[in-house]
Image (cartoon, rainbow, N blue to C red; front, side, top):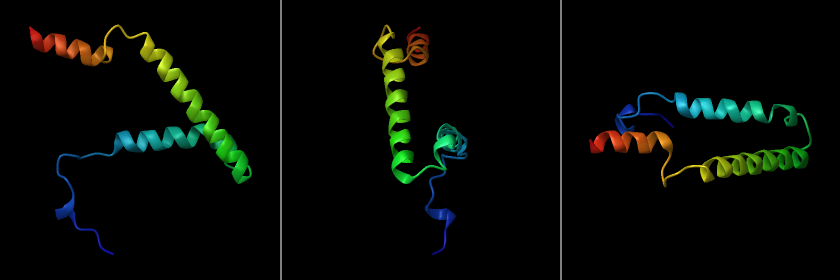
Length: 79
C-alpha cells in the first residue's frame, strides 16, 4: 500500500489537536496499561464515564445553547 498526497484534503495542515487528544488519553490510562485486559477496559470505561459526567456538569452551567466562546464570537459578528 502506498500513500498519495493527491487524495488528502488540503485544508488540514496540522494534526496537533488529534495528537494532543491521543497523548492526553494515553496519559490518563498510564497506570492501567500494565493490568490485565479486563481491568484495563474497566478503568478506561470508568475514565470515559467520569469525563462525560464532568463535561455534562460544565455544560449545564452554560447560559446559552452554545459554548461561551462561540456565543461571544456570534455576538461580536452581530455588531
